[in-house]
Length: 413
Image (cartoon, rainbow, N blue to C red; front, side, top):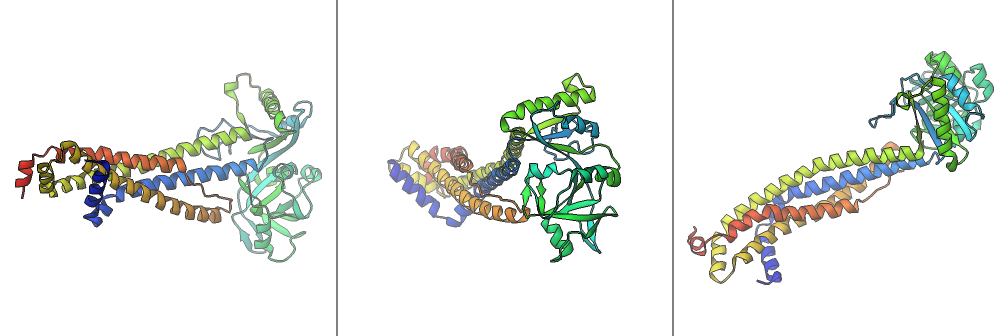
């Protein structure tokens, strides 16, 4: 039997009961579509996070307290007190870290801000220095920046983001007005230009105050939640990292590197960790989604066995007319592969469409430049696996059909 005839016979067998064929491939469609969606969202998330990381520039370095994170938690070390004011003073000394361009400590201040009864609960309040503006490339569109005098005097001044300004003050000019943070008054001295997402911060919802004020008057602490630094150039980053590590170990009296109570993260390190974490999560979710392909394969086997039983007389007649065992085997395997391959193609199309609309929704909800990524590799693998499932789960029913005796098959009622 020629291949073309086998294929045409398989097509006729599938078309005989269109509804049953459609329901049979549902599991394959769902499995492939789920894999496409998961891979697309995973790759889109990776691209979005890496884009935010790259917005800081390749010379940016982050110093965090505590041990290096062993999970994707962004708050590792948030409550550790290993980065002290004395550490900042040592790092600011150009003799200790000569290739350091800028350094900015960060104190995270949880809570709300308010103005005349209007409350904003989703603002990000940071105690820091003016250096963070150069590192993040964010500057007031109106007003002024925090100065060293503000740091030294623990001034109650604040720079607010554009969303904060519009929600608290409407169309009024906020410069010189007083807002409340932790029941303490702060005078607004500047408003950031609209910027959107930069690294993990939405600048439009940001409130910046002097870190000394945050430490002494709001949080009652003498340490930092993190320190952001910038080297003179990308080429200087390895040396700056080495110098920072050396200085902090000296400050903390650490001689064994395994006892470090801080860790230094470069942009390249952060990008590598993000890629690894998102890849692992995507692979895990894809493996879970692939289970439905196995379920779909079992459904294919069941339906093909039913089909063999229903077409017993047809099989006997074809064998009586000269069809060989291999011809019957090929026909039923071709039908199974055709069903699963069609399910794979349909799953790819549905998964791609859903992924596209998900990227639009996520981009709006998260206010980020979330881009749609179609996972070509996942599509090829999904289609290949679907076809392979047709072979694997269609082989047993095909052998059952091919092994039937023509005499017994013709007698079957």
